[in-house]
Length: 336
Figure 1 (cartoon, rainbow, N blue to C red):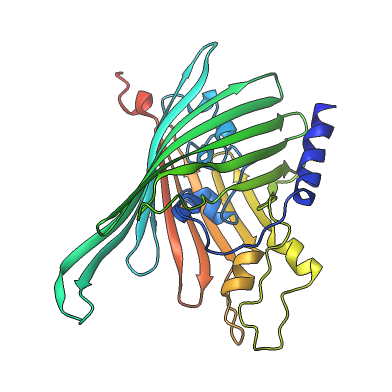
Figure 2: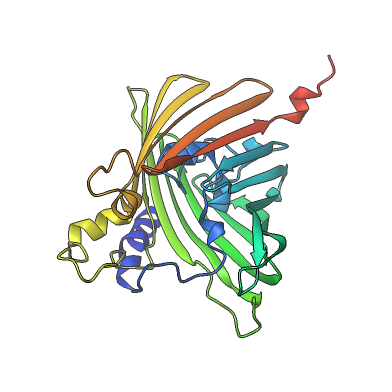
Protein backbone atom coordinates (compact mmCIF):
# COMPACT_ATOMS: atom_id res chain seq x y z
CA UNK A 1 0.00 0.00 0.00
CA UNK A 2 2.84 2.37 0.81
CA UNK A 3 4.45 1.68 -2.57
CA UNK A 4 1.16 2.47 -4.36
CA UNK A 5 0.89 5.75 -2.45
CA UNK A 6 4.52 6.57 -3.29
CA UNK A 7 4.03 6.21 -7.05
CA UNK A 8 0.64 7.95 -6.94
CA UNK A 9 2.41 10.96 -5.45
CA UNK A 10 4.96 10.85 -8.28
CA UNK A 11 2.23 10.73 -10.93
CA UNK A 12 -0.05 13.47 -9.61
CA UNK A 13 2.46 16.01 -8.34
CA UNK A 14 2.91 17.57 -11.82
CA UNK A 15 -0.82 18.33 -11.89
CA UNK A 16 -0.75 20.49 -8.78
CA UNK A 17 1.72 23.24 -9.69
CA UNK A 18 2.53 25.30 -12.75
CA UNK A 19 5.44 27.58 -13.56
CA UNK A 20 7.68 28.56 -16.44
CA UNK A 21 11.27 27.41 -16.71
CA UNK A 22 14.18 29.78 -17.20
CA UNK A 23 17.21 31.32 -15.53
CA UNK A 24 15.16 33.09 -12.90
CA UNK A 25 16.73 31.64 -9.73
CA UNK A 26 19.85 32.38 -7.76
CA UNK A 27 22.39 29.71 -6.74
CA UNK A 28 21.81 27.71 -9.93
CA UNK A 29 25.17 26.03 -9.31
CA UNK A 30 23.33 23.80 -6.81
CA UNK A 31 21.89 21.92 -9.79
CA UNK A 32 25.27 21.12 -11.36
CA UNK A 33 26.18 17.46 -11.50
CA UNK A 34 29.26 16.44 -9.51
CA UNK A 35 29.04 12.67 -9.92
CA UNK A 36 30.78 10.92 -12.83
CA UNK A 37 28.28 8.07 -12.61
CA UNK A 38 25.29 10.41 -12.76
CA UNK A 39 26.89 12.35 -15.62
CA UNK A 40 27.40 9.14 -17.61
CA UNK A 41 23.78 8.04 -17.18
CA UNK A 42 22.04 11.27 -18.15
CA UNK A 43 23.12 13.90 -15.65
CA UNK A 44 21.11 13.10 -12.55
CA UNK A 45 19.73 10.16 -10.57
CA UNK A 46 17.65 10.00 -7.39
CA UNK A 47 16.95 6.26 -7.40
CA UNK A 48 20.29 4.55 -8.10
CA UNK A 49 22.40 4.31 -4.94
CA UNK A 50 25.25 2.15 -6.28
CA UNK A 51 26.96 2.58 -2.88
CA UNK A 52 28.53 5.73 -4.36
CA UNK A 53 28.94 8.59 -1.86
CA UNK A 54 28.67 11.20 -4.62
CA UNK A 55 25.01 10.30 -5.25
CA UNK A 56 23.39 11.41 -1.94
CA UNK A 57 24.12 14.93 -3.24
CA UNK A 58 20.99 14.48 -5.39
CA UNK A 59 18.89 12.51 -2.92
CA UNK A 60 20.01 12.36 0.74
CA UNK A 61 18.08 9.13 1.33
CA UNK A 62 20.57 7.34 -0.97
CA UNK A 63 23.10 7.57 1.86
CA UNK A 64 23.43 4.17 3.53
CA UNK A 65 25.61 2.13 5.86
CA UNK A 66 27.66 0.62 2.99
CA UNK A 67 29.28 4.07 2.59
CA UNK A 68 30.53 4.11 6.19
CA UNK A 69 33.92 5.83 6.50
CA UNK A 70 34.11 6.51 2.75
CA UNK A 71 35.63 9.66 1.26
CA UNK A 72 34.26 10.95 -2.06
CA UNK A 73 36.25 13.34 -4.26
CA UNK A 74 34.71 14.77 -7.43
CA UNK A 75 36.01 17.29 -9.95
CA UNK A 76 34.42 18.56 -13.15
CA UNK A 77 35.76 20.71 -15.98
CA UNK A 78 33.21 23.02 -17.55
CA UNK A 79 33.25 25.66 -20.27
CA UNK A 80 35.28 28.90 -20.39
CA UNK A 81 37.71 27.78 -17.71
CA UNK A 82 35.02 27.11 -15.11
CA UNK A 83 35.70 24.29 -12.65
CA UNK A 84 33.54 22.84 -9.93
CA UNK A 85 33.66 19.94 -7.51
CA UNK A 86 32.37 18.18 -4.43
CA UNK A 87 34.04 16.39 -1.53
CA UNK A 88 32.33 14.48 1.27
CA UNK A 89 32.84 12.01 4.10
CA UNK A 90 30.34 9.54 5.55
CA UNK A 91 29.93 7.78 8.88
CA UNK A 92 27.27 5.37 10.14
CA UNK A 93 26.29 4.97 13.78
CA UNK A 94 24.37 1.90 14.85
CA UNK A 95 20.77 2.66 15.87
CA UNK A 96 21.22 6.31 14.84
CA UNK A 97 21.57 6.22 11.06
CA UNK A 98 24.08 7.46 8.49
CA UNK A 99 25.69 10.88 8.43
CA UNK A 100 27.72 12.70 5.78
CA UNK A 101 29.38 16.10 5.55
CA UNK A 102 30.63 17.71 2.38
CA UNK A 103 31.30 20.88 0.46
CA UNK A 104 30.54 21.76 -3.15
CA UNK A 105 32.08 24.69 -5.00
CA UNK A 106 32.25 26.38 -8.36
CA UNK A 107 35.06 28.68 -9.47
CA UNK A 108 34.26 31.00 -12.37
CA UNK A 109 37.91 32.01 -12.76
CA UNK A 110 39.60 35.41 -12.95
CA UNK A 111 38.10 38.43 -14.71
CA UNK A 112 39.45 41.81 -15.84
CA UNK A 113 37.90 44.71 -13.91
CA UNK A 114 37.04 47.77 -16.01
CA UNK A 115 35.18 51.02 -15.39
CA UNK A 116 32.42 52.46 -17.59
CA UNK A 117 35.04 54.13 -19.81
CA UNK A 118 36.81 50.84 -20.45
CA UNK A 119 39.83 51.54 -18.26
CA UNK A 120 41.14 48.38 -16.58
CA UNK A 121 41.44 48.40 -12.81
CA UNK A 122 43.00 45.02 -12.11
CA UNK A 123 41.22 41.71 -11.82
CA UNK A 124 38.57 40.03 -9.68
CA UNK A 125 37.31 36.52 -9.02
CA UNK A 126 33.93 34.86 -8.56
CA UNK A 127 33.05 31.67 -6.71
CA UNK A 128 30.18 29.99 -4.87
CA UNK A 129 30.10 27.36 -2.13
CA UNK A 130 27.58 25.11 -0.40
CA UNK A 131 28.06 22.94 2.67
CA UNK A 132 26.18 19.64 2.74
CA UNK A 133 25.07 18.13 6.07
CA UNK A 134 23.31 14.87 5.22
CA UNK A 135 21.43 12.44 7.45
CA UNK A 136 19.54 9.28 6.44
CA UNK A 137 17.78 6.51 8.30
CA UNK A 138 16.04 3.30 7.30
CA UNK A 139 12.43 3.27 8.48
CA UNK A 140 11.89 -0.39 7.53
CA UNK A 141 13.36 -3.03 5.20
CA UNK A 142 12.22 -1.17 2.07
CA UNK A 143 12.17 2.56 2.76
CA UNK A 144 14.89 5.06 3.71
CA UNK A 145 14.40 8.77 4.39
CA UNK A 146 17.02 11.50 4.29
CA UNK A 147 17.65 15.21 4.71
CA UNK A 148 20.42 17.49 3.46
CA UNK A 149 20.84 20.94 5.05
CA UNK A 150 22.87 23.27 2.82
CA UNK A 151 24.23 26.67 3.88
CA UNK A 152 25.15 28.55 0.68
CA UNK A 153 27.68 31.35 0.13
CA UNK A 154 28.28 33.30 -3.05
CA UNK A 155 31.00 35.86 -3.74
CA UNK A 156 30.85 37.58 -7.14
CA UNK A 157 33.42 40.40 -7.37
CA UNK A 158 32.51 42.71 -4.45
CA UNK A 159 28.97 41.32 -4.11
CA UNK A 160 28.24 38.75 -1.41
CA UNK A 161 25.17 36.63 -0.78
CA UNK A 162 24.22 33.87 1.66
CA UNK A 163 21.30 31.49 1.93
CA UNK A 164 20.18 28.18 3.31
CA UNK A 165 18.24 25.37 1.69
CA UNK A 166 17.20 21.80 2.35
CA UNK A 167 16.76 18.58 0.39
CA UNK A 168 14.18 16.04 1.60
CA UNK A 169 14.19 12.56 0.06
CA UNK A 170 12.75 9.08 0.32
CA UNK A 171 14.03 5.91 -1.34
CA UNK A 172 12.39 2.53 -1.92
CA UNK A 173 14.69 -0.46 -2.49
CA UNK A 174 13.42 -3.99 -3.20
CA UNK A 175 16.42 -6.27 -3.57
CA UNK A 176 14.26 -9.28 -4.45
CA UNK A 177 13.02 -7.63 -7.63
CA UNK A 178 16.21 -5.55 -8.12
CA UNK A 179 14.05 -2.43 -8.18
CA UNK A 180 14.60 0.95 -6.56
CA UNK A 181 12.77 4.27 -6.67
CA UNK A 182 13.31 7.72 -5.21
CA UNK A 183 11.52 11.01 -4.66
CA UNK A 184 13.22 14.22 -3.52
CA UNK A 185 12.39 17.88 -2.97
CA UNK A 186 15.61 19.81 -3.62
CA UNK A 187 16.72 23.33 -2.73
CA UNK A 188 13.76 24.35 -0.61
CA UNK A 189 14.88 27.43 1.30
CA UNK A 190 15.55 31.14 1.17
CA UNK A 191 18.24 33.77 0.75
CA UNK A 192 19.47 35.20 4.04
CA UNK A 193 21.45 38.03 2.46
CA UNK A 194 20.97 39.17 -1.11
CA UNK A 195 23.67 40.64 -3.33
CA UNK A 196 22.25 44.17 -3.27
CA UNK A 197 20.17 44.17 -0.09
CA UNK A 198 16.96 44.71 -2.07
CA UNK A 199 15.30 41.45 -1.06
CA UNK A 200 15.92 37.78 -1.57
CA UNK A 201 15.93 36.09 -4.95
CA UNK A 202 14.17 32.70 -5.37
CA UNK A 203 16.16 29.48 -5.03
CA UNK A 204 16.06 26.70 -7.68
CA UNK A 205 13.39 24.57 -5.98
CA UNK A 206 12.79 21.29 -7.78
CA UNK A 207 10.88 18.04 -7.24
CA UNK A 208 12.43 14.95 -8.82
CA UNK A 209 11.36 11.30 -9.00
CA UNK A 210 13.10 8.29 -10.45
CA UNK A 211 13.06 4.52 -10.79
CA UNK A 212 15.85 2.01 -11.51
CA UNK A 213 15.43 -1.63 -12.56
CA UNK A 214 18.03 -4.31 -13.21
CA UNK A 215 17.13 -7.17 -15.53
CA UNK A 216 17.06 -10.54 -13.82
CA UNK A 217 18.85 -12.59 -16.48
CA UNK A 218 20.92 -9.97 -18.32
CA UNK A 219 23.70 -7.57 -17.22
CA UNK A 220 21.68 -4.40 -17.83
CA UNK A 221 20.21 -1.80 -15.50
CA UNK A 222 17.84 0.94 -16.67
CA UNK A 223 16.92 4.22 -15.00
CA UNK A 224 14.22 6.82 -15.63
CA UNK A 225 14.44 10.17 -13.85
CA UNK A 226 11.61 12.72 -14.05
CA UNK A 227 12.69 16.28 -13.30
CA UNK A 228 10.72 19.42 -12.48
CA UNK A 229 7.56 17.77 -11.22
CA UNK A 230 6.66 21.20 -9.83
CA UNK A 231 6.50 22.63 -13.39
CA UNK A 232 3.99 21.37 -15.90
CA UNK A 233 5.51 23.36 -18.78
CA UNK A 234 9.22 23.19 -19.60
CA UNK A 235 8.89 24.58 -23.13
CA UNK A 236 9.39 28.21 -24.08
CA UNK A 237 9.42 30.12 -27.34
CA UNK A 238 12.60 32.14 -26.95
CA UNK A 239 12.43 33.55 -30.50
CA UNK A 240 8.91 34.81 -31.12
CA UNK A 241 9.72 36.10 -34.62
CA UNK A 242 10.19 32.64 -36.14
CA UNK A 243 7.57 30.07 -37.13
CA UNK A 244 8.58 27.51 -34.48
CA UNK A 245 6.06 27.14 -31.68
CA UNK A 246 6.67 26.39 -28.02
CA UNK A 247 6.47 22.64 -28.54
CA UNK A 248 3.88 19.90 -28.46
CA UNK A 249 2.55 18.00 -25.45
CA UNK A 250 4.84 15.09 -26.27
CA UNK A 251 7.83 17.41 -26.52
CA UNK A 252 7.03 18.89 -23.10
CA UNK A 253 6.65 15.45 -21.48
CA UNK A 254 10.01 14.31 -22.88
CA UNK A 255 11.71 17.43 -21.50
CA UNK A 256 10.96 16.16 -17.99
CA UNK A 257 12.70 12.82 -18.58
CA UNK A 258 16.26 11.55 -18.33
CA UNK A 259 17.04 8.03 -19.51
CA UNK A 260 20.05 6.00 -18.39
CA UNK A 261 21.36 2.50 -19.03
CA UNK A 262 24.24 0.55 -17.51
CA UNK A 263 26.07 -2.52 -18.74
CA UNK A 264 27.45 -4.66 -15.91
CA UNK A 265 29.68 -7.35 -17.47
CA UNK A 266 31.65 -7.86 -14.24
CA UNK A 267 30.92 -7.37 -10.56
CA UNK A 268 33.33 -4.45 -10.16
CA UNK A 269 32.94 -2.72 -13.53
CA UNK A 270 30.19 -0.75 -15.23
CA UNK A 271 29.78 1.20 -18.45
CA UNK A 272 26.87 3.56 -18.95
CA UNK A 273 25.12 5.93 -21.32
CA UNK A 274 22.32 8.43 -20.94
CA UNK A 275 20.03 10.80 -22.79
CA UNK A 276 18.76 14.16 -21.53
CA UNK A 277 16.06 15.33 -23.95
CA UNK A 278 15.67 18.81 -22.48
CA UNK A 279 19.39 19.51 -22.79
CA UNK A 280 19.33 18.38 -26.41
CA UNK A 281 16.18 20.36 -27.25
CA UNK A 282 17.56 23.59 -25.82
CA UNK A 283 21.24 23.43 -26.80
CA UNK A 284 21.53 21.53 -30.08
CA UNK A 285 22.47 23.36 -33.27
CA UNK A 286 19.55 23.09 -35.69
CA UNK A 287 21.70 22.36 -38.75
CA UNK A 288 24.06 19.99 -36.94
CA UNK A 289 22.70 18.70 -33.62
CA UNK A 290 25.53 16.23 -33.07
CA UNK A 291 25.49 14.35 -29.76
CA UNK A 292 24.06 17.17 -27.62
CA UNK A 293 22.10 15.62 -24.76
CA UNK A 294 23.92 12.30 -24.83
CA UNK A 295 26.41 11.12 -22.21
CA UNK A 296 28.75 8.17 -21.65
CA UNK A 297 31.08 6.89 -18.96
CA UNK A 298 32.53 3.96 -17.08
CA UNK A 299 33.75 2.98 -13.64
CA UNK A 300 35.53 0.26 -11.73
CA UNK A 301 36.30 -0.55 -8.13
CA UNK A 302 38.99 -2.40 -6.19
CA UNK A 303 39.30 -2.99 -2.47
CA UNK A 304 40.88 0.36 -1.62
CA UNK A 305 39.05 2.72 -3.97
CA UNK A 306 36.55 3.18 -6.81
CA UNK A 307 37.06 5.31 -9.93
CA UNK A 308 34.44 6.70 -12.32
CA UNK A 309 34.57 8.89 -15.42
CA UNK A 310 31.64 10.57 -17.15
CA UNK A 311 31.32 12.86 -20.15
CA UNK A 312 28.12 14.70 -21.06
CA UNK A 313 27.76 16.70 -24.26
CA UNK A 314 25.97 20.03 -24.15
CA UNK A 315 26.68 21.50 -27.58
CA UNK A 316 28.96 21.31 -30.59
CA UNK A 317 31.19 23.70 -28.65
CA UNK A 318 32.13 20.93 -26.27
CA UNK A 319 31.31 18.71 -23.32
CA UNK A 320 31.86 18.54 -19.58
CA UNK A 321 34.17 15.93 -18.09
CA UNK A 322 33.69 14.47 -14.62
CA UNK A 323 35.97 12.33 -12.45
CA UNK A 324 34.86 10.73 -9.18
CA UNK A 325 37.07 8.82 -6.76
CA UNK A 326 35.78 7.04 -3.67
CA UNK A 327 38.39 6.11 -1.08
CA UNK A 328 38.11 3.46 1.64
CA UNK A 329 40.56 4.69 4.32
CA UNK A 330 40.19 1.67 6.60
CA UNK A 331 41.59 -0.50 3.79
CA UNK A 332 44.22 1.97 2.57
CA UNK A 333 45.71 2.41 6.03
CA UNK A 334 45.08 -1.12 7.26
CA UNK A 335 48.03 -2.60 9.12
CA UNK A 336 48.93 -6.12 8.08
